[in-house]
Image (tube, helix red, strand yellow):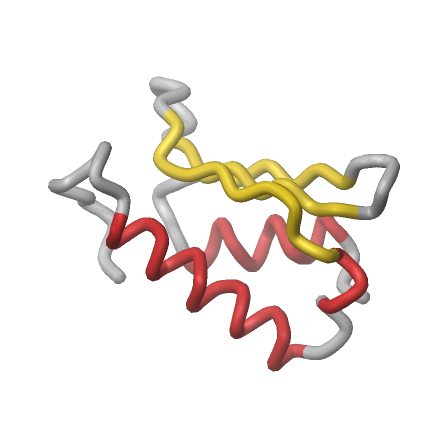
Amino acid sequence: MIYLAQLRAQLERTFSPLACECNVTGDHSLTVKLYHPASGQVDLVVSGLNVATLKTPEAVAALIEELRYELQSNSLNPHNPIPL
């Protein structure tokens, strides 16, 4: 399993200039929030991810691809300035 600080840093590098919050709940599910650090505007929140599945670099890469897809599909932000 990847450490949350490492995951957050990797997501921030990938989705720059967005900031990221990663939180694990008591049932070991992960919530990822991508937002604009200056305004606090949230672009994406994904909850219920199984933290135990993030054991390999390939699993983390798959998560990043899923988040990228979700950002592109986000109808609340049709003019996403983040290069994907």
